[in-house]
Length: 170
Image 1 (cartoon, rainbow, N blue to C red):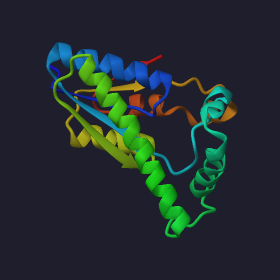
Image 2: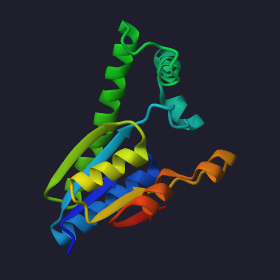
Image 3: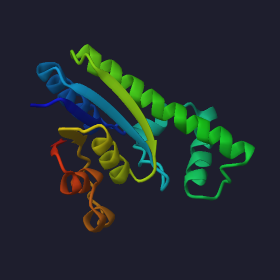
């Protein structure tokens, strides 16, 4: 019996599909749905050209500032670092709010959100353990580069290390 489903989201299209599947399962089995988003230290997700084009030109320098902070070249305790940190928190919360709205629209009744920071694999697994998840649902992103080949994806690592069942959604 599924009592708790954990779905991780990074705001990507694959994560959206994972949220939809997890929400459908939560509704069907009347399970609690825990949505988790992990703020990652090591860099911004790759932006697609069409995504960057949607950012108003006035805000594009902020993308460079956030990247610099995540790369460790902006002091997080500085005024700029604190402002960027708040922006990242708000962005993460927005991703979770949108995921929760999707979940409720698809019939999930008991939805909670968790905003984490750190290594995505470690935080997803810790959250699953803490919440006693019976199932983890994550989106798959095709990492076609050499880095993805050697390091593996978050979804692959989660599925290999989790103590509960996992579904990776394409």
